[in-house]
Image (tube, rainbow, N blue to C red; front, side, top):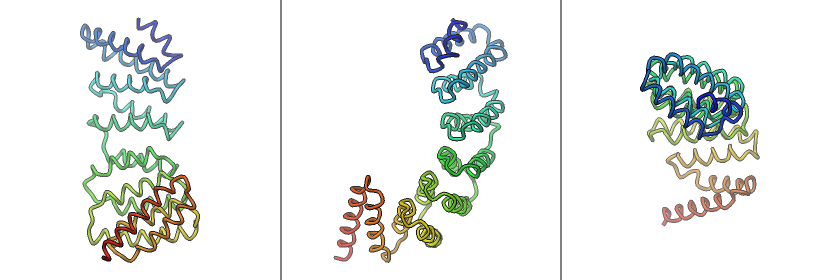
Length: 265
């Protein structure tokens, strides 16, 4: 069965049924001879999945099978797996299957560190700011750090935004970062600094919807009434620039107008 299924999977790696058959066979073989399973069978199986991934690097079933092998061997080959992930990300740095697998390894490994993985995401982001998977993985790593990362992340975002103001992944990460911070006087001061550089970018890119959305977010987070009318003006601009979401912007406009009216009353 192993020989037959391997021949088919090499050409059709997304056949989940055949991977299930192989797992059932391996579970039986592991119970009969565990040392041979770990030292001989698993390396061969990893090689098979790697061959399958060469034909389809985004094969759900192949990556799932690789995860299963890591669990069955108690993550003994993590270092090699990390190198393989790096190789695949050189070919396609936006392959979310690889990023998910790296995150899986990090969560279960005793040798990988958050700091090393964070440095890896930094390198990938610097080489290509339009890498949503790198930004997303950062958002899962940063809360696990013991030091304050906020200022450094804002600098990275600012650099990325000025490099490519139309890249939505940067702005999504920016939104997450601001919303994740506790409200404090220091945070309010930082928001005003954010407002300055985003306004500067908006003047350079007046028809960029992402800068407008960021301005509205920062003004909304600032504990001040001075931006009420300006937020509504920006929303009117977004209705014109982003007509597919015009009803959403109109909804926000109505909501804020009502809120302002209630506060004044």
